[in-house]
Image (cartoon, rainbow, N blue to C red):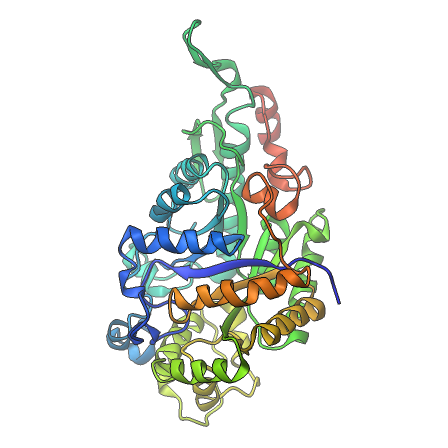
Length: 462
């Protein structure tokens, strides 16, 4: 078996419901307290006790209104609505912890790069280098309409825009302020050296930016970069930019192929294959014995909402699944939603509404491991061995119970096998995950914009 140590993120959202829908109704679940700081700071401390690498916080800018062409079920079941800003949580959780990383989602389709750069740099300062950005382009028509557009930008075109967006951010993060620009010279009355702070002048197809980055260099400069798209265009984007990629899958063979494709794209972009860490979404229900775990799973099923899971999936693929009969095959339709997910569940894949409801028995579509600590550890190790994954994004079921169970039962078992760390490494989030420096490696395209002088930047623009 591989001795690769498993990386772990807790997968969550600043909302009542996230992936496993309906479980907010369980009497031990506390997710309705999501709008309190205590809920998040207590969770952060719990995850740090379990040596989790990060808390990965999803986000959307619209609402799930495709299923039955209505918001009724979304509101009744709190299907990611209400949903609050994920970035607002980080400073409080960073103050309550010392090592836990924070992967925050922000859609570049609706966030001006100049202002998002300031928000991310601010959080990287306040957390002392523990921030990652999950780069998304959005997939909901409801978000586009809410933000004044008739329709979303076409799927692949959004990635063209994203490539340029990242170029703007690299110029701001890496090139606007040189190392050593901050002097803090009280006697000489010089906080910063004007000769080492440069204006970014970007005149592109999608963005025009002329200005100085509003933040001095943070510990990582560029936050750790996550990405979640696995369409052909999404993989190409990930190979160029991402340091962590979040994938989904039901079977090891299919997941292994996704991993291979992402690593191949990184190599094609001139980066090492191991420059990208790959995480798979997973649900774990564990108890001291297999029988107790099965009982807990059965208990959770009584509170879950498979139909809410279908409503979530309908918006993810842009197809109203309520319009299908139970045994009618789901037909592929070209939409601007999540292309990779749409192709997985349509176009001769054998998926019907009945099979989807069975898959979503726990309210979500991710693989679910149920068993004793030894059985769960075996399964995690097998996933890593068979797929070359680096780790997992663990979804919540009953919160915070599901994370506490994993920490108390599975983490010690993994540690005893040498498959999980026994202490945090020092340094930033990037240092912890890659055992290298805090900033982008030289092989990353963002590093090309590092410490630019005015003349060098003009030459590059030309």
